[in-house]
Image (cartoon, rainbow, N blue to C red):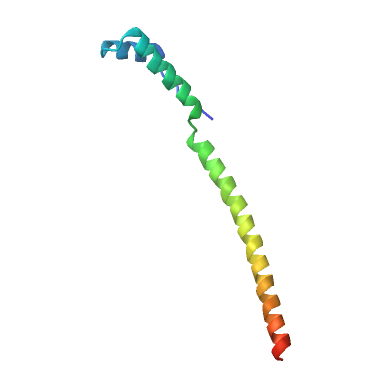
Length: 83
């Protein structure tokens, strides 16, 4: 996953200029920097979504085949009883 880079010193100075004290501004910048670890890129998300779609398609194909077999067995059983 990728991280978003930003100038922490500039951000800290802007917070201090807006009225934050030094400790508050450093804490805000630290929390934002740590929060970047939880972010994901669009490419990573798209790759995971594609992987999920592929796995889901495979399961649906298998389920369709199994349902077709069950229907064929039910029809054969019905035909055996009445014909």
